[in-house]
Amino acid sequence: MSHKRAGQPDGQALDSHGRVPPADTRLVRKRMAENIGHERRRAGLSQSELARASGVKRETIARLEAAQQEPRLITLVGFSFALRVPLHVFLVGLPEPGETND
Image (cartoon, rainbow, N blue to C red; front, side, top):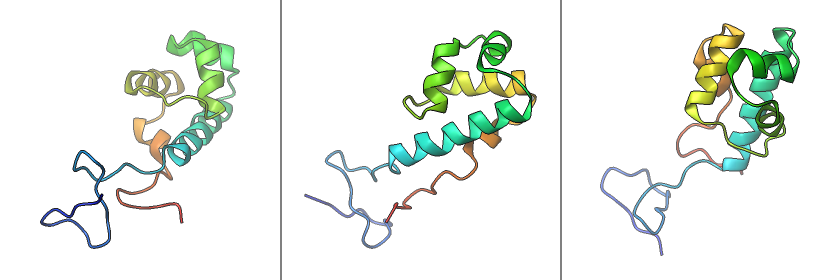
């Protein structure tokens, strides 16, 4: 059952908790995976080197780059410092709120 809240865009259904559902998490994981891998390669680092520089396990980096896991904010902060890039570069290309993958 979908509900509509005052001020909510037309045609946007709410979930069972009355919230607008998030963007497709598979798409978010895929885009973030691409961004993480791109920035690591741009810096000329292997996954092991990024692991040492960021304090994140190499296995975790492999799962993130394969879009098998969603990164925690603190993980992205560690990558940001290790790769010397602003945090927002990992968010480039993510869907906007309410955007669907139709």
